[in-house]
Each structure stands twice: as C-alpha cells, then as structure tokens.
Image 1 (cartoon, rainbow, N blue to C red):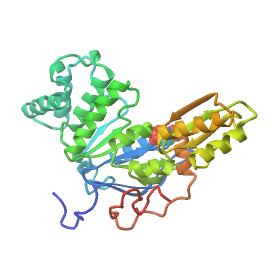
Image 2 (tube, helix red, strand yellow):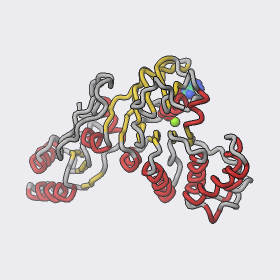
Image 3 (cartoon, rainbow, N blue to C red):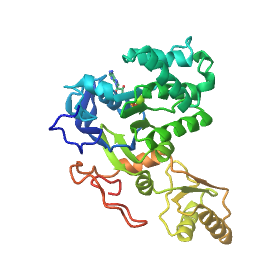
Image 4 (spheres, rainbow, N blue to C red):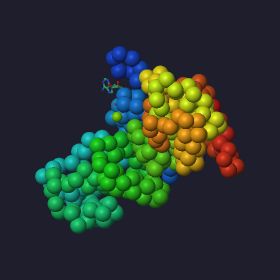
Length: 347
Ligand SMILES: Nc1ncnc2c1ncn2[C@@H]1O[C@H](COP(=O)(O)OP(=O)(O)O)[C@@H](O)[C@H]1O
Ligand SMILES: [Mg+2]
C-alpha cells in the first residue's frame, strides 16, 4: 500500500535529526542514519550511547522529541501501526514463555500478530526449520541454551516476515559458539534480503555481519562507513612491545624504524611501546630482529586487534562530519583506496 507520493527510493530505515532527551540531558542529539534495502547496518557504540533508545524509537516504543524517522516509508509518529506491521524487533532480553515449548511460543507470537491458528502453526514450523530448532520444537524453553534462545528470538522476530528487522545486541551474553550460531542466522536473513539494523558494542560483530557501520557517540553518528573503512580509520592490528624500564625511548626509535610507522608510548606504562601493523607476521619478525640486534631483547611482544577504546578514541577524536544529504551511493573505489563517501570514516 505505498502512497503515490511516497518516494520509492527512500531507504527502509531513514532517520534525520533524531533527538531524544531523558531528564538529565539529550541522549540522542541529532542522529542521521540510513539503512539501504537488503543490507545490514551495525549501530556501534559504547554502553549508554543511545543504541537501545534509537531502536525503541524505530520500533515505535518511544516517541522522538524531534526529527524525522521513517521505517519502510512510514513515519513512526504519524503512522505507528503501519510501522509496527513492517518491523520485527529482537530485544536484549528474551520475551519467551519458559514453560511453553519453542513451537508453542512461536504460535502464540503469531496469534498475537493476528495470524490464524493454522497459518501461525505453518510459519512456526518453517521458522523452527530455518533456525535449526525443528528437533527441539516441543521442548520447554527453560531447557534451551543461550544460543538456542536467541535463535528462537530471531525466529519470533521473523515469524511475521517483516521487511525490516531490528536486533538490539543480539549476541550480548552469549558464549562464542552461540554467537557464531546467531551470526550465521543473521547473515542468512540478510542474504534473503531482510533489511537489518543491529546494535552492538563489539567491533568484531560489526565486522562479521554488517555491510555498513555507524558509530554512535555523544548523541550523534560520529563515523559511518563499511567495516573495512572503519578498520582503516582505526589503524588495523597493533603490536605491543614490552621492554626493560628506562629503555623505552630507545626501543620506540627502533620499532618506528623497523616498521616505518609512528609508535605510541602510553603514559600509564613506562615499559610499553605500541604501534599499528599491516602485515602481522612480518611486523613481529622485524621488531624482534631489530631489538635483538641492538642488544635490547623485548620482555614481551604481542599482536592484537585494536581495542574498542582505541577505536572510539580514534574515531571520536575526529571533527564531526557534515550531515549526510549528498548523493547516497559512492562510486566504487579502486583497490586500496577509500570510497569518497558523503560521511565516510576517512575524514
Ligand atoms: N526510559 C529512560 N529514562 C531515563 N533515562 C533513560 C531511559 N532509557 C535510557 N535512558 C538513558 O539514556 C542513555 C542511553 O541509554 P541506551 O539507549 O539504553 O544506551 P545503549 O543501548 O547504547 O547502551 C543512558 O544514559 C540511559 O540511562
Ligand atoms: Mg542497549
């Protein structure tokens, strides 16, 4: 039922200038966000950044103070019912009946969404199959592992086949195996064309699942791009080199020369030198050789991913980008170059 005047090119999730204040001050202070059709956008941000608040506004559970928020072409304030029919929400906390079986939960959910008994049953079976739960469909949910529960959550969120899916920290609290299960399920949905916005505190999750990433901080989207663009902005892997105290300056010069990059000497650690690396193995060898040759063998050397703190520091340390109002689609970039995005992380 698209309105003759509704723009067909409008993305399934479109947020402009979203503001929301609770008592003490603004939580969302002018959020701009688009999720293109059939893509997964990861809304990344530290605890308290306003991710859940954003999701709740999109799901019509919370009224925005200001801004334009449209889901599947419908305005969340003026057409909340139309939005609700088109969006599936999987929250941080499962809303499952522990005593009922998985299948019963799904059927009940379908009935709540006005499906007939037979149709609800048919869809419940299809969803159990899709999420690998067909064999345990009759078991009470209280016997389910964390990963099985979250897959059942996803099944419930998709039972009514919404074109837009909102996942609020879908893997928080799950063990690594369960996390992999959920990632597989989400990726599968994306491959079938469901437009998905998921929130996460984990860079790795955004990297695995998302076509695009938006970083929420200080009430605004402070960086936006593909996971590769984000990682490029963060600086990729890091090498940590621990040396004897008093010899750090010397070690820093050697590491900088061996890797050809700027190194950091963290204020809190007088024995640590840290640097970004591109080729992990080559960097490790080069650093150890250089330090050994200078008679300064490292006490410890380690390679690691950048921490989330480093990522946020890098990203939020940049000046804010101009609002995204330009052409939505960047031209494909040549290998190794960053696409010129309207609001790329590459400032
Ligand atoms: N209903 C509410 N009333 C008052 N403050 C709230 C409410 N919901 C969220 N907040 C506050 O808004 C901020 C953002 O919360 P939230 O959106 O849950 O962040 P995130 O999901 O990114 O961790 C937090 O400081 C939180 O305490
Ligand atoms: Mg949250």
